[in-house]
Image (cartoon, rainbow, N blue to C red; front, side, top):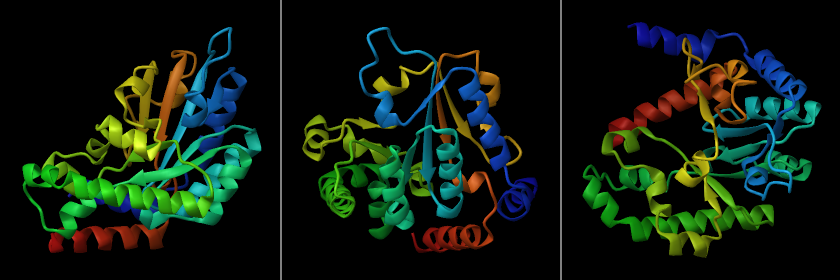
Length: 257
């Protein structure tokens, strides 16, 4: 019951947390952190070495409206970030704005989970045996987004779906094949071990009442030199319509699967 109450509060009653995000961005800037997109972070550091860095990664699971508000905060403070959009949240107008500004807009992929649900697969070994077909679908989706945006996407981020958790098969397993990754032209997936080792700490937002794990990003400033912050806009401001749509979709997909 407590979990349900917390979920209802997060989805429909929670006050906006965007003021905190503005404070975080401003404070990190005042303390000398370079606030970067993942794409920028992958560029070779300057000759004198990389200084304090805070990489902002936004996974747009839902709520494009709040994502646009977070982008506006970043523009106001002159920083950049990475935004990863699912097929269900693609907003090419916003993505072009993000790209024109100098931030990164790319793909939040979930073909493995989608395939499992669409074909009613409940066995992880059977699902993995279908990876060749799933990779074809991933590449088609990636190329369609690239054609629409008229640019190459060099980083992508795996989405986590309830089907992935039940099957213990994560979406980014399809990118463990280096030849396939090279054919797609992907330099980095956001959960790559080689990438994550470059950060002193990786922080993710959480729903009410936890908010962050493993610590509050404001508390990490000055304590860690290199920080990766993963955020989901839906957890920063309530959006009744989006929350209801996602909850209904999750219920329907679970029953159908």
